[in-house]
Image 1 (cartoon, rainbow, N blue to C red):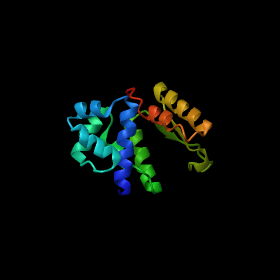
Image 2 (tube, helix red, strand yellow; image 1 turned 90 degrees about the vertical axis):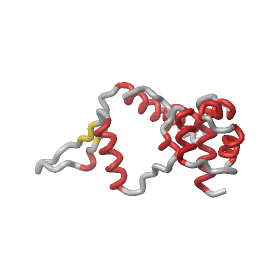
Image 3 (tube, rainbow, N blue to C red; image 1 turned 135 degrees about the vertical axis):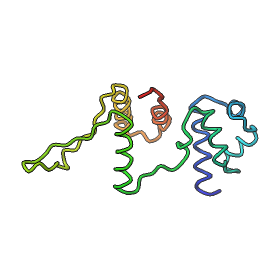
Length: 148
């Protein structure tokens, strides 16, 4: 089994369990045969994009959650932050020096949205515990669906 198939298998199973769904529940909600769901979750088969869309809809997540969204460069990070800034109330700011130039060591990212700040606070609590074994808690936070 290749790495992509393995990762998708684990993610489908994880999201299904987070939603407290059985394989049969996911089958009925997605319209995909239960034996196919089992093959996806064990990595015997790799779902095509169309099937992933059906699974994502049934799980109440975005299909992009199944894809690798890793950021590898500072440019990719900036692009992601600009996109987030345009879509939310996120503010990127920094102090200026006497010449009017922004001081990199003072850069801040802030949100006015109380729900976003509450969720970020919960994430910081999770992170402080440094409990990488409790991925369920992190995934629960990620699946929070309070509108922005």
